[in-house]
Amino acid sequence: MSELNLKAFAAAVAGAVAVASFAAPSFAQGMGGDTKGKEKCYGVSKAGENQCAAANGAHSCQAQSKVDMDGNEWKYVEAGSCAKMGGKTQAFQGKGMMPEKKGG
Amino acid sequence: MWLEAQRAFQSTVVGTNDTIAPHVRAAYGPLANRIAVYRNTVQQSLIDVLATAFPAVQRIVGARFFAALARDFVRTRLPDVPQLSVYGVHFADFIASHEHIRDLPYLADVARLEWARGEAYFAADAPVFDPAVLATLEPEQLASLKLKLHPATRLIASRYPIHRIWAVNQPDVTEVPAIDMSIAENVLVSRPAYDVIIRFVPSADATFVQAFSQGRSLGEAAAEAMGSHPEFDLQTALQNHFIHGTFASMAAA
Image (cartoon, rainbow over all chains, first blue to last red; front, side, top):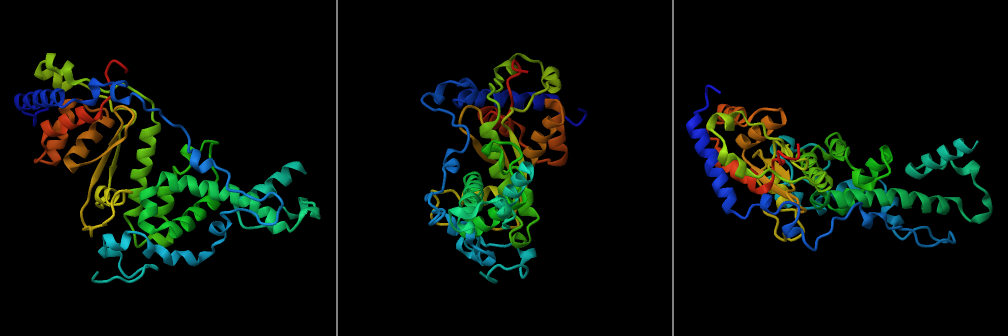
């Protein structure tokens, strides 16, 4: 505590308390307030949906093509936003299978 | 025999083999199609769980790459517990060690951020700290005060600009800007009520928050943050923590 200027410390805390109280803070709402009408949803229901369609074995699942892709999709990283953001970092350029975007 | 069949079924469903074959009667059509029904249900469901939990990661690498990545993960790791909301706790580490992601060293930290967001969402509900009680304390009492982090509070420190990367990969962002990947950013996750808050915090503030997780008092935490980061703005940091529910109510302890 020797490095701490107690007076400045207390002033900063008091300032924070004052501003936070003024700023319609979340502690004033507790677990009520703006949570009205909201309901917490447990689990991932979307992912629990059964993807399978045909029971007769003629074809297996509507999403089967997604599962059946082999190693080729590793080159599809360009489809995402990483290239637009600047993609890889300097230190990692030239390695791996990313499409080369040097100078981009 | 039954246990052996179950193991063969599991191996077939999570993998790419057909060890279940000797246990299957032949009368109901091609075996490969029948296996695919189960395999697809299990693997695609888990892949979809990961896509739901890691939307920014998916957007960064694209849906097809993500599906391949997620499928690799699914095949090496079955759920530890029968609860889909906790499936994916090891995904960030998996990304960090994956040979095809070495070009994107920030991706694992983006995954950690998204996982922290999910953890905060499912964390125990708890009232947040009400700073009004501080107004009654003397400076010495303030300095020795122990504040507890809220159960939903998570800090993610990164060598990369993960807050920016995460922010520009939200669904409503259409124009993804270029980002200087040499900037290090820390993100603080909190959930004062039902909405998860994700915000950037300066590294001084990250040191400050970390001190509380190590049991330091308010004064000790402030001294630590100032000691390593002379620019630390205690008042601004603290008021944001109060507003965004970083700390738990003392009464609840």
